[in-house]
Image 1: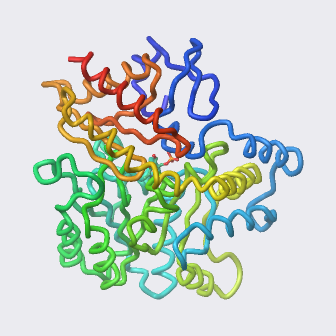
Image 2: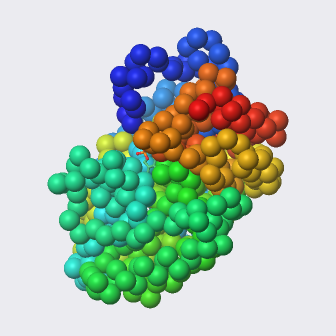
Image 3: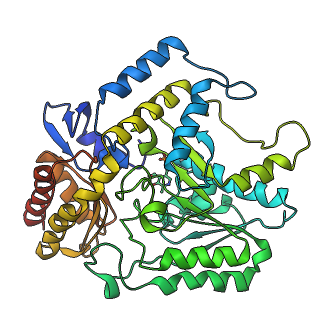
Length: 427
Ligand SMILES: Cc1ncc(COP(=O)(O)O)c(C=O)c1O
């Protein structure tokens, strides 16, 4: 099983058999409140009838169309609908099937772009410590989570460097929203430019809000500085918004929420409400045009997937984006975020808690690691909550909460109350 303690899991499996609205049903018939939108992806809530119908209709009408040299109209409609949600100018869309594929696609677009404009020596990619960019070789190379890299370290991309992460409890513990301290950490990019020379650097990729590594909220001014430095040196800035896009932070994208526009945005998860695997990369039109115009005739970008823009995925994307718009779910997330923040920070005085942090409908509750057993405390808290009917996530010793955007205030209280009970119950 992916990212799972297989032996432990198989001794005591946790299986889900049904889902509707805010709730899962487990194989032993229990109702479980979804505090994590599945894996940060079911933003509109489970079992949405409009999406189910759209997928069923599409499967009956056109199950598949080749994506190379041939297309189908809905992939273009879906691309236009995605472009409408992206920041102005990022209106060229390439479809993938996952976040990992979106990341590798974005990195390849960055390299192809520089080559097309006659700077093929710009091959270096800059990621960030603690970054998560999926599990492709590109993604783990720019990623900064050491267990994800260790076993494969001999085969990572050669020209990669990393910025320092921004997590610092000494300065920022219990910040509400963006922390005050840490904008200067973006200046580390100047150091990397001085070391490698800008002429060798293709792109910088960061998660605007890092989710999988334990909810790291960008300090005020940090992303603005990264943007200014990348712009100064002609380096592309990629925001990996696989988690952030589609309302998680109370706006269509983190770029919109935080008022910083990158050159490329990667996405997946919420794009289709996870009903069909789907992802996409949005790029500025100038990047698209540079790559396409550089080739006199024939294929311009040697990249793509059999299932890029799969008809079931585009049907799910169109139906999902329609729900987001009709129900104004991004605004709903923004409106709920103050109550969510308040509920989360009530845990500051709970046992074992060393930090509570939040942005939009995301909260991280960091626990003091148990002596000699890092991660054990959060893992026990997760299992306790699951047994009590609330699904949370944990990574390291941080619990991560990211509920569907349809959550009600009473359910927010239930999630954080259950976590408090779990923290009181464990050692
Ligand atoms: C920021 C980010 N990038 C990439 C990915 C990888 O996405 P997937 O698991 O769909 O390949 C994730 C998954 O959580 C993510 O959070």
